[in-house]
View 1 (cartoon, one colour):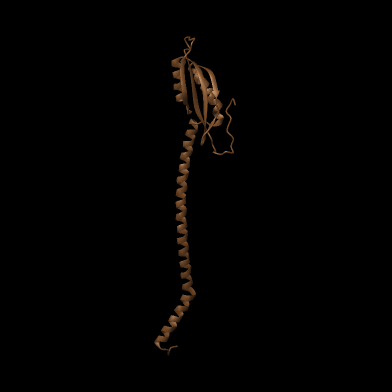
View 2: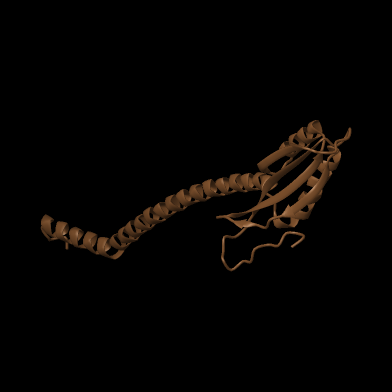
Length: 191
């Protein structure tokens, strides 16, 4: 080997380098390239998951806001189980206003998109100012009430406490949880 020309040493060095490269360095470079591709893929996946997490957080925040709004609206539009309480409260409002309820007629529910409209015909006797007090208190009630077909007339036989009679229809609303034709309509008390 000592008598070899200088370029043969160079050829042997190149061959040894090629063997070392092919045996050790090339597989490591492939592993490194595969690891880099895997890292890029995982980073993209993590970014997508972070984006979905932000969207989920936004949706959860909106859901909490909507749930709060629904709870506020449920105070205004009663659930079915609260109807008897509402009737008692209307009667108590009339009593507190020193009015007498002569007629209290439940006209049944009218089916709407996501609620039932519930008209109640009422005939009340008492004083004019007491009637105004009754409607003022009804307007301040936490539930939603609409007064329709309002008519007042003087009583023929008046006394100090009873001078007028009033006929009106008071409407309130009942919230439906599900909008499905499979669910039967609730029956209010007295039906």
